[in-house]
Image (cartoon, rainbow, N blue to C red; front, side):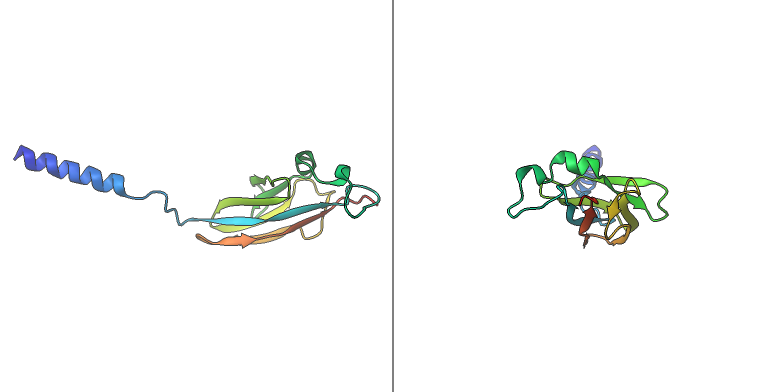
Length: 131
């Protein structure tokens, strides 16, 4: 009898532990590229190295994902040096916008809908106002 109870407990434990908790279907992804420019008064082709975005450039122009009512920041979008980003978010509707309104996001604020296990693409273009 004790053997049956022990085997039953072992089986229950194995079943519980074998449940894959990584298959979280209540999340999706927001992905895209952030472009910032111009960074110099006169742009050249090819661009001068000092006129290329750096990690500091992206820190100075922070783009956030906000709740749909824009009362709370959900996450800071942190792009790589090429401006590419990808963040995972719970399913729902969000607003993507710059942190400070005096910056010029050409297509911001943007409303995005995140669906379960899907990727929503948003390209962000920021005009620095430098001429």
